[in-house]
Length: 402
Image 1 (tube, rainbow, N blue to C red):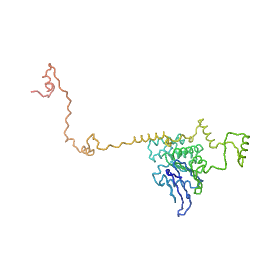
Image 2 (tube, rainbow, N blue to C red; image 1 turned 120 degrees about the vertical axis):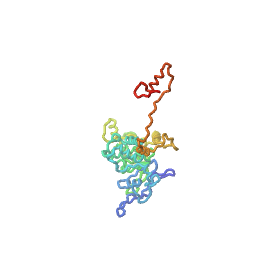
Image 3 (spheres, rainbow, N blue to C red; image 1 turned 180 degrees about the vertical axis):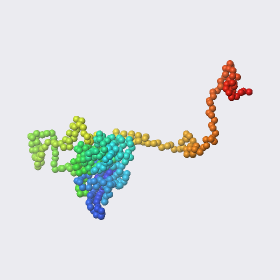
Image 4 (cartoon, rainbow, N blue to C red; image 1 turned 90 degrees about the vertical axis):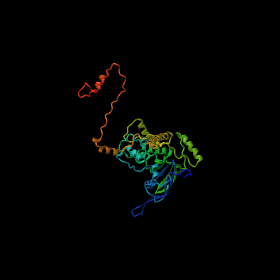
């Protein structure tokens, strides 16, 4: 349970939800006295068959439904607190996406809802598309996607804000074995990187490989709770795994076991790989032969912004510095020196329209630039120059010198 220094990410105490009809009569008790906690850095499983109250519990945690009684806290606050929503990523049981948008536009749209800047959005979209294997199909409209491809883009949408708490409701529904394995690997990786994950499913084999603790619901009530080892390990049998043994060796072991215990060796069999492992092997062999596929591809590694390693931390620091550099610098305090005197544009225009050009004195002609006179040569006839300047003998109407 909770320690003194570790506050639960999600705390549910005696949660009850009763759906009522129009006349406020109880119609169905979907959740009945459910209590559990999700700790930081924990992958928690919420399991049960259809109709056991899993989705109702999740919607109450998200603030989409109101509880009838009990208490629910997310990051120490009620689910109705708006500030809590920025720290949560949610993949619903059915992905409700805009069909006319393509994958890239979808992720960019949800990034804008979280007010993520353009540079960060573009980088995260590229990383998420590569992670879920939709890079080659990123420009196709979502309405053209198969059910499995829509689940992939829905998972990417749930991670666009780098959430602290990731809630996945039936995440592997509609996925092929490749996508199922990828989602399970991603959940394990996110838990290792410090995320808290709430995984709800009725496919127990998918959950068994991922969760740290789990509760199993039936009829809206908690039937079992604990770790996988607490719930699944049997203590009345033992398994010994060795290299292949011949019949004589098996007989000797059986005789030794009978001497030490009441019974002998009950079963000897060859190891058998799971069908999922065989399927993944076939897919990897096909990829090695470079066979093409029109569907989603096997995704790449976990997006860098979801990894809490040193490289991603440094990239995030650089990203914050660049974003700060792009912001406009506020003007300095104090009056700035004016380059030109203040001018009333509206008043000046009105004066220009009302001014009478005839009453305005004509401006004097610009004076021609003159160079400083220098000394004249001694043989120059000064009287000839004077007559030319006075217009004497050069043209009609010239002024005579006295």
